[in-house]
Image (cartoon, rainbow, N blue to C red; front, side):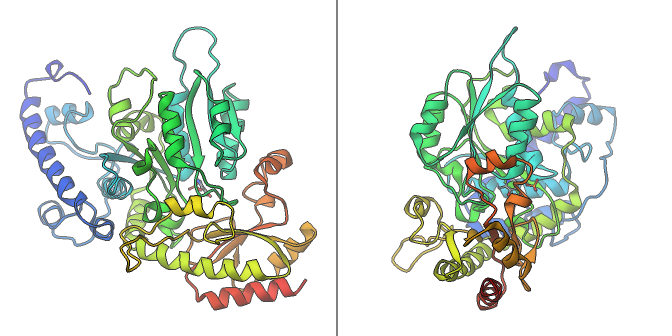
Length: 468
Ligand SMILES: Cc1ncc(COP(=O)(O)O)c(C=O)c1O
């Protein structure tokens, strides 16, 4: 933020107007954050007043496709460009439709966490992961510096590539992989004074690994570094890592948040403030990380989402909680079926009581605002599972090729059931050694269960497996 005194006198009247607007916005945010999760998901910050005063009464958030904002005079232009007054300027920086999505996501991810949160939305999940991690990887002093970060190896294949190829091989940064993210001792052994952040995916795609988020956040904070969690597969309807101490949450909005499968997007939600010992001249870096990202690095990288996509995502978000409830129940039925099938050697789904991480995951994965009738929240585990077909990799391909209802696609989080073989698709680029580390053999099929009747999904899997 620039010093106000440097500006033309006429800027003053816009500052006064801006202060009034900001106070009103803060009041709407305060009021909205006291509502229940579903209400926030349905309305976000788009109140009746907002609709009537600013948007001609439109009940649904309007789609602002314009690339830029016009100003009343040079004073307003100057104040807006210096971020002295709220505005959106240019869609690469900000946009009114995207704003509504960001505000809704910040409130949902921060729901009942006790923290204020902010959000920056990006063009994809990968853009969000890059944007969230990059500011921590800058040099802090002259001369050689051996920067490292510690990450679970159980991450989406694209994330593995970003860390191992783009950041480690091409830039000389060190990534220290954790093979068993649930084991705190492994993390402890890898952190030192040059570690910039800890990174984990929970539950992970496709292996359903999980970790003790609270202890990991405490460990990170003991070193004065942030914990970044990719919670794409859980969504805030099932888990909100900030409430457990995480500093930053990243999402591929492309997945369960936009189950219709009509838009690509990503999000970074940070708590205020984040824990970091890194020096940055901008106080917002620590105080309001997501907003810092949005107004500075993202503006330069050009990672903005299209407002059209933002609206599609916003629209799907309204039914997030009920969808995750329903889809999780479907997935559990399918997982139970697969775990009994003689041609299946193993099923990884955190909702199965037989899964070795079931009780750990049960501590964290709870349907928001649910009640089991005895005052306890209801556990739900999402709609992603993986299973291994008995025998050779060729057997897995035969079963996969035989599916008639379930789509073969490198995607997940859809309202329609989808399956892929990660070793030849999402996790192909990372090579055999990295797949061995992450335990992703070619017999493993990843299945994301949709909203079809689960009997039909089971029947499709059954006919494909019985073909062997
Ligand atoms: C857990 C997870 N994080 C991030 C991503 C990347 O998201 P996007 O495809 O939106 O870039 C994916 C994609 O599959 C994912 O599964």
